[in-house]
Amino acid sequence: MIFASIFRNDPELVHLPAGERLFAEGEPGDHVMYVLVAGTADIVVRGKVVEHVELGAILGELAVIESQPRSATVIATSESTFARIDEKRFRFLVSETPHFAIEVMRIMAQRLRNTDAMLPD
Image (cartoon, rainbow, N blue to C red; front, side):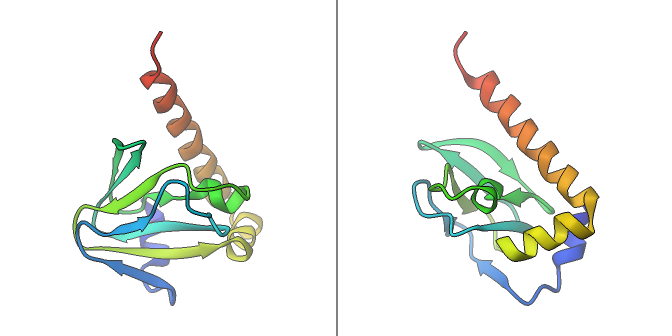
């Protein structure tokens, strides 16, 4: 995904070894989301891995949009690097790069569809 290359040299990179947590379900979101610029990670909800993500994945996008606790835990599954995107930067990206906003909406829609598919009939 293009986001990995855009944020690769970001000044606010977070480096995690495999097995370390980026954030945890229930923690304050602090109006911050992340882009995975190197490595892999799992998104875990209520102890269940719901998605394995790779280069360019957007993580924690709900926290930058609403002031609610994190709805999932993200754990690095390999040595990983994440770019930190706060609310101010997110708003700038949305206003200056409409493609960015559409891609975030696509990811949110796909995650909602995936969640719906996991629900019992």
